[in-house]
Image 1 (tube, rainbow, N blue to C red):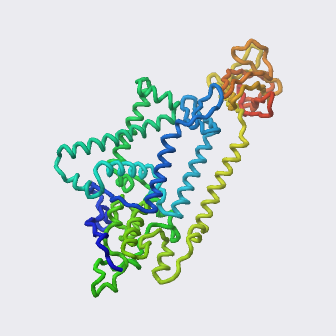
Image 2: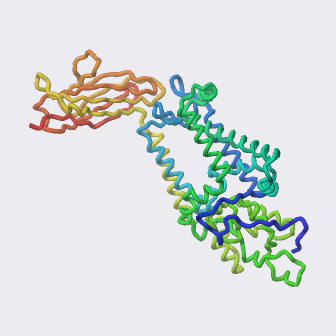
Image 3: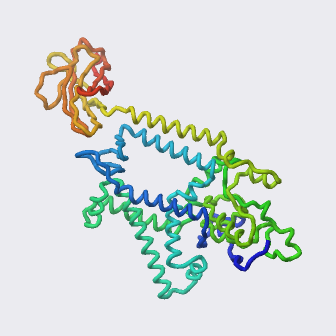
Amino acid sequence: MSVTPEVDKIDVEAVNNRRKRSLYKARQAIHPMRVSGTFRRLKWWIMGVTLAIYYITPWIRWNRGPGVPDQAVLIDLEHRRFFFFFIEIWPQEFYYVAGLLIMAGIGLFLVTSVLGRAWCGYTCPQTVWVDLFVHVERFIDGDRNARFRLDKAPWGFTKIRKRLSKYLIWVLIGVATGGAWVFYFADAPTLFVDLFTGEASSVAYTTVAILTATTFIFGGMMREQVCTYMCPWPRIQAAMLDENSLTVTYNDWRGEPRGRHRKTADAARLGDCIDCNQCVAVCPMGIDIRDGSQLECINCALCIDACNNVMAKTGGTPDLISYTSLNSYETAAEGGTPPPVRKTIFRPRTLVYTSIWAAVGVAMLAVLISRDRLDINVLADRNPRYVQLSDGQIRNGYTIKILNMEQQARRVLLQVSGIPDALMTVAGQDLWPSRTREFELEADKVLSLKVFVAAPREQLEPGENPFSFSVTDLVGIEQAHYGARLYAPED
């Protein structure tokens, strides 16, 4: 293999060199070089899709009928509900959110066990926004060498103009990021106008300001330090990996010993690596993948693209750096044939993760489909716990909330049962005490009632007496029950 003049050795040293690590060290700027290839295109697509989802989703409309927000995805803190297209989650259904978090965690374990830190390299918000900021920086300041020269250049008109232009665009990206976030918590078109007319709440302005600052600092200034020092996942991932996990690996059994002088007498003993340092120059984390597996590596595979480009120019065999597992690496190093990728991916560990992930998803879907849209909550008065009436009856007070979680009005029957002669009265209604009451429920609303339940003293045991409230849809078949207690004197 001969070296062509097209492949120059880059004078670069890994900023995060594993042999020179220090916990107390000023940050050295990392300006990754532009690279093209399969994984760079994949990162472009993923960055575009994820940013589009984040920025566009709050503007998607979804007709739910009168009196209900028409925003497809909305976290309605004022009314304590979460809307996701046709799904509406009420506070007492928060277990759905917990289920989604469980699925996200298991999904992260699955991806890590198969592809290492692929989440970090492609879809983590820190990675996506840093990638966006780096492209802005490259557009204004130039590629890697031009940026280093600009860093060292004295302050003048050109440097100030480029710095101000870059920082302004970064701030605008931060404002757009913070603005998009607050749009998930209020009607986006209305809040957008309010933000520009000064009529939005102070909370909205404060949130946008904080997210603008954190986006600017994390994406523009700290970058890889967030991943290395602030994020716990690099430390946790070791427990998720095994000898069959695919990670970005330098195949040193093929590449060593390194050398550029292929026409010398020693050329025959050299490996495939021509020591051009391109893999180091393109790394956004500032590491040398040839040093082996490292904490900082986010498996973005840009070093694979850089190395494959060099191999293509020099006529070498591609995938000197590749996604491979420890088992495949050791097998190839010994001259054997590595197992096919499908056997690496489909193994007991990943199948268990997939099964658990699918089981949680199916369970949530089943509960979501079969859930009732009528519910009742009861809160007993604590002071006084009971009142003895003039005729000797014992009366307790309750605050009852009946939830109609459908987009249409309902007529329901509220009933008390469990104590033979217990009767209820509703505050504000001039009706005789009875065991049942009918109410009209507004669509997608909560009806709050103050209810008093009284029963003859001789029918009650001292202390707690269990009974229940039930609410029944008079047109449909839905019912909801709530077990309550009626307190009586203990003497």
